[in-house]
Image (cartoon, rainbow, N blue to C red; front, top):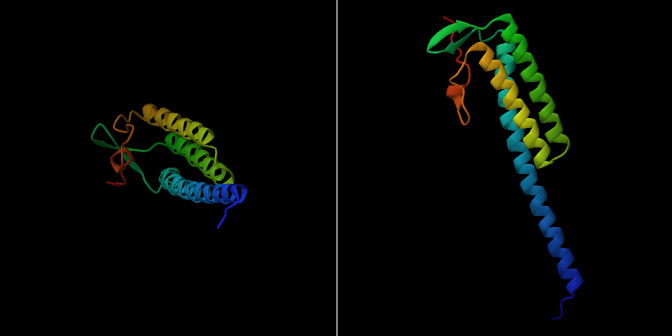
Length: 131
C-alpha cells in the first residue's frame, strides 16, 4: 500500500492543529478559572462582604478607598478574562497578568500588607474575619 506524502503530511498537520487547539482550550479554561477566583475575591472585598484584612498579624478594617481599589482589580480581571476568552496570545496574556500583579502589589503596598508574595496561595489573600 502506497501512501501519498502530501496526504500523510496534511493529515499529520491537521492532527497537530487539533492537539494544539485542545491544549490551548485546556490552558485557556484553567486561566479563566483562576482569574475567576481572583475576580470573586476582589469583588467580595469591593462589595464589603469582607470587612477586615490581616496586616502584620492584626485584623484591620478595609477602608472605602481600599474597596474602590479592589473594584479596579475586579474590573481589570474581568477584562483579562474576556481577552483570554476571545483569543489566546501567550505573550499578551503574560503582559496582562503582569499588569494585574503590579496593580495588586500597589494596592496591598498602600494598605501595608506585606504577607502577599509571589506564589502565595490562600495565605496571600485577605482573610475573611469579621470580628
